[in-house]
Amino acid sequence: MTNMVWKRDEVESPCVQICVVHPTERICTGCYRTLDEISRWSKMDSSERAEIMQDLPARKPRLAKRRGGRAARLSRD
Image 1: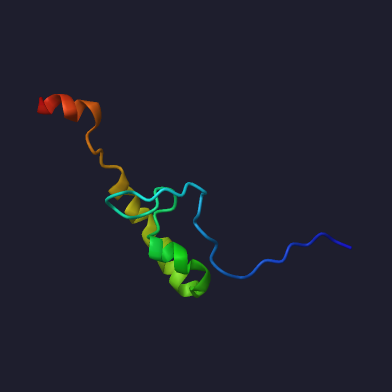
Image 2 (image 1 turned 90 degrees about the horizontal axis):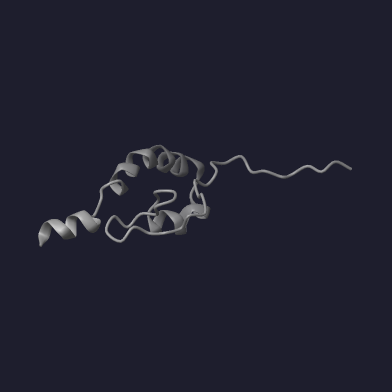
């Protein structure tokens, strides 16, 4: 008996197990999907998943913006 793993022929999830939603952008900081996309992922067909996967890299820069930090607080004083 071989130890074969059954796999479905579909687009894999982009989840990297860093599940934190950005407070203003409202996308996951790990995979860049919206909460709606995450919740519907298992119900989507392969073409919809593939379309989202193509869009994800363009979302990454939205999270790269600094929100201020210590330097911003000091410059306001």
